[in-house]
View 1 (cartoon, rainbow over the protein chains, first blue to last red):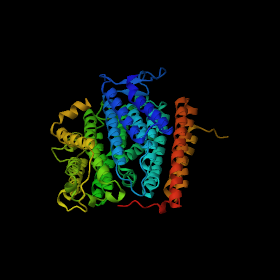
View 2 (cartoon, chains in turn orange, blue):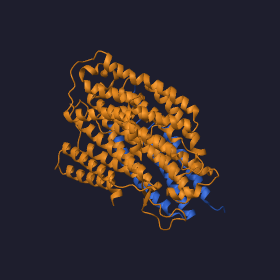
View 3 (cartoon, helix red, strand yellow):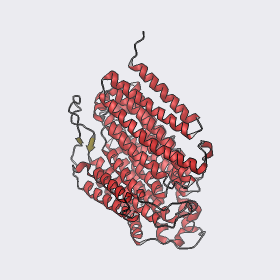
View 4 (cartoon, rainbow over the protein chains, first blue to last red):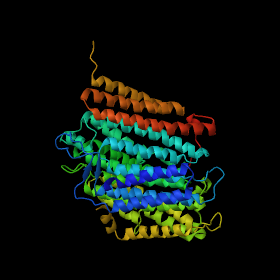
Length: 491
Length: 102
C-alpha cells in the first residue's frame, strides 16, 4: 500500500525506537539520526507515489448511498501529497533543531534531551500526514487528537521548569476546550447528515438552500476547533504563552506544522464536506476571524520583548493572511474554496515554512536558555556570527513580505485572491497590518546589525548546520525570485 | 406519559455542554476545569449515541468509542501534567500560575 506508506513508516519506526530506547540499546543521539533517516525515506516514498488527475479514495463503504459510493476514509491527491511533504519536511527540520539544542550547554533547570524528544515528533508527523488525507470525520478526529495529545507532552517536556509546565497546562486546557467544540460540532453535522464521510455530507447538503440551523451551528463549532489549531483570534490566547514556555524546536513545530495541519483540515472540510452554499455560514465568520487576527496579531507583536512571543503574535497575523486566501469560496457550482484560493494557501504556507523554520533554527542556537530569549540578546548578532544574523534577517524580512524574499510571493497571492473575490475591507485591513508588521520585523533586523552587542563572544555553529542555514537562505531568496517553483510544487 | 424523542436527548446534551463550558470559564481550580472539559466531551457523546439510536446510524456509536478512547489518553497526559505542576508549585489554582508574561 504505497499511499499509506509515510504513516506506516513513521509509526513503525517510532514504536521500534521506543522499544530499543526502553531497553537501553541505543543512545539519544542515534535515535535522532534514525528519526531523520525515517523521515527522509518517507519523503522519498511520498515523492515517488504517483498522483492521478482525480482524487483516489480508500476503505470505501460498499453500502454508501447513491452518488457517494467509492468515497472512503482516506484520500490521495496532489493536495494530500503537497501537505504530506510539507509536514515531513517540517518534522525533519524540527528534529534537526532538537539535535542542535541537545548539543547546547544545559541550563540549571533544563533537563538534557532524552530519546523520546526525537520519537514523539514522528507520531505527530504520522498524525499530520493522516490529516492531509482524511476523507471522513472519524479519521479527522482521531488523527487531529494524535497530533494534539502528543503536543501536550512535547510542550511540557522540561517538567522541572515552572514556565514549561505552565505552558503545557494552558495548552492542555485550551486544547481540550477546542476538542470539545470539535466533537460537538462533528456530532451535530454527522448526526443530522446520518454519515461521517465528507462525500456523504456534501451529497446531502449541497443544495441551493441554506444549511439547516443545527448543521450550520455544527460547522461553526468545528471552525472553533480548527481556529484553535491555526491560532486565530479569538482562539489565539494560548499561543504567546505556549510559544514562550515550550522548548524552541517545539515552538517551531507548533508555529509551522500545527498551523498548517489546521489549515489543511479547514480547507478539506470546507471543500469536501460542504459545498459553495455553506459559504453563507462560514464566510462571514471567517472574515471576522481573519480581520481580528490580522489587526491583533500584528499590533500586539510590536510590544513584545521576548522573540518567541513576538513570533507567536506574528504567527496569529499570518493566520489572518492565510484565512484571507481561504475566503475564496461561495462561487456557484464550484467547490467550497476556489482553486486560486487553494493555491494561495499552499504557497503562503510554503513560504512561511521556509522563513519561520529558519528563524527558529537561529533562535535555537542563539537562545539556549529562556533568559536569552529577549530581543535585546540579538543586539549586534552580526558581530558575533554573520551567518546567523544573515539567516535571521533573511527570514524576518521574508516574514515581513518584502521582495525579493519568498514571503513576498505568499503575501502577493493572498492579496490577489482577496481582490479577486471582492473582500475589499479585508484587503485594506491586511495592507495596514502588513505595514505594521514591517515595524517589528525590521526592528529586530536593525538591532542585529546596528546595535552594540551585550556580549561579544562569537557563537559557534556546527558545519552541517552552517550548510543547512546557507541552503535555507538561498531558498528564501531563490523562491522569491522565481515564483514558478511554487506553481510546480502545488501542481 | 410523555414520549422521549431525539430532541429531548439533544436538549440534555446541549445543557450538559453549556454547564461544562460555564465550568471551564468560571471555576478557578485546574482539576475542576479539567472535569468540566470531560463533561463537554460526554455531552457530545450523548448526542452521538442519541443520533445513533433514533436514526439507526451505527457509525455514530463507533465515533463515540473513539471519543472515549481519545479522552482517556488526554486524561492520562493531562493529569500527569497537573500532578507535575502541583509538585512544583504546591497549587492547582489558576491565579497562581502566571509566570509567562511579555
